[in-house]
Amino acid sequence: MNFFEPIDGELACEGVRLTEIAQAVGTPVYVYSSATLERHYTVLTDALVGQGLKGRDGAAPLIAFAVKANSNLAVLKTLARLGAGADTVSEGEIRRALAAGIPAERIVFSGVGKTAQEIEFALKAGVSEINVESEPEMHLISTIAQRLGLRAPIALRVNPDVSAGGHAKIATGKSDNKFGVSISEAERLYAQASNNAGLNPVGVTCHIGSQITDLAPLEAAFAKMARLVARLRADGLSVERLDLGGGLGVPYFDQPEPATPADYAAMIARTLGDLDIALSFEPGRMIAANAGVLLAKVLHIHERPEGRKFVVLDAAMNDLIRPAMYDAYHDLRPVRPRPGPADTYDVVGPVCETGDTFTRDRRLPSLEAGDLVAFMSAGAYGAVMASEYNSRLLVPEVLVRGDQFAIVRPRPTYEDMLAREVVPDWV
Ligand code: LLP
Image (cartoon, rainbow, N blue to C red; front, side, top):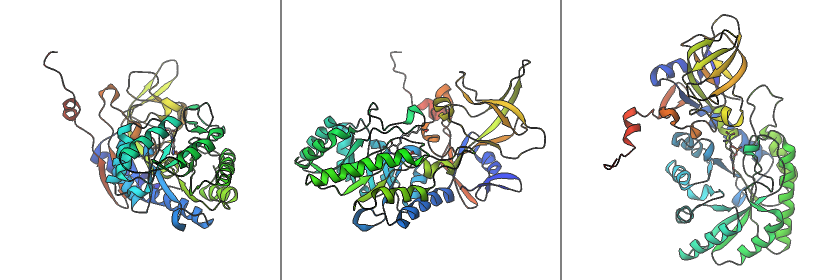
C-alpha cells in the first residue's frame, strides 16, 4: 500500500498534488512519501514482533534499512526516528547513516570489497557488526582491529548456494557469485575467528538476492542457516545473531500478489523460531520502492510513418536506470489523465543511445506534449543510481509529509556541475 492517490482526479503524494511539485521544482524529480516509508517500516516490524521474533536483548529485531536503496538523508532520518538501523556498504553510507542520526550500534557494515580505510573508519565509529565476506577480508579486519586495540564484532556472510530466480544481475546466493563464504567453510572460519585476538564473531548472515517475491528460496536458505547455527553451537561456539539480509520483492505491476510481510514473518517463525537467536534484517526495496515516484514531463509525441509512436520524456536512463539495466518494469501513470483513446507507445528519454528506452509497446492512456507522468515504485534504486551522463543535471529529490513538501536534494546548477572539474594550466 502507498500514499500516491488522485485528489480530484489528479495524482498526488499524500496531500500534495504532483503538479504543484513539478511547478515548484521542475522535472524530472523524485518524490517520496513519508507516510509510505513509515507504513512499510511499521508493517514489517509489527509482523516480526507479532510472530514473537526477537532481536538483541529481547527487543524487536533490528531492521537495518539498506542505505543503497535510498540514501537521501531526509529519508534515512524519517526511518531513524522510528528506530531503524542501517545496512551500509561503504564509508560514505556509514557517514550518511550517522549524519541521519542512526546510532552506530544499529549500523551494519557489509560489502565484498571493504578497504582498510573503510574498515578502520567503521571500527572507530563503533558499528554493531562488520559482515565479513571472505577469508582474506577477515584477516584484514583482524589486523586493523588489533592495531586499534579492539576486537572487531563480525558476522560471517555465508553463501547458502540457493538459486532465488529473478534477474541474474541481482541474484547473489549461488556459490558462483562473488558474495560470502561457502557454507562448507563457514565452521572452520567461524572457529578461527573465535580464536583470533582481533575478532569477536557475533553471528552469521546471508543474503540471496533482491526482488524475491517467492518465499520458497528464502525458506530454503534460512533453513540451511539454522542448521549451520546448530552445528556451530554444537562445536561450542557462541552464535548470538543471525542477519537475514535484504527484504522481500515488491509488486511493480499487477503480478499475482507477492508474499506479504505477514507471510514472510510467519515463514521465519516456522523456520527459525526455535533457534533462540537475535534476528536482524536488511530490507531496502520493500520499504522504499513504493514510497517514491519519478515525475517527468512529456516533451514530444513522435510518430513514425511505419507506425511506431514514441513518447519522448525529459527523464532519461541517467535518472532511472532500472529499465535499461535490468529490463525492469515501472508502471507509468499520467498525473492528470485526459480524455481520449489509449494508444501503444515506446517511452524513451533524450539520451543518445537506444538503451535509453523505459518501455516498448506499452498501452498507455492518451498523452500529449506537456503532460506530466509518474514512474511508480521508483523510491528504491532510483535516485541513488542516477548519474550526470550526457551532462544532464543530477535529478533532485522531494520529500512529502501530509500537505507539506521539501526539496531534500536540490537540482544542481550548470555552474555547480562545471565547477567540480579542474583544467590544469598545462592543458
Ligand atoms: N543486504 C545486502 C547484503 C544486499 O546486497 C542488498 C541488496 C540488500 C540487503 C537489500 O536488498 P533489498 O531488500 O532491497 O532487496 N539495483 C538493483 C538492486 C540491487 C540490490 C543489491 N543488494 C535494482 O534496482 O533492482
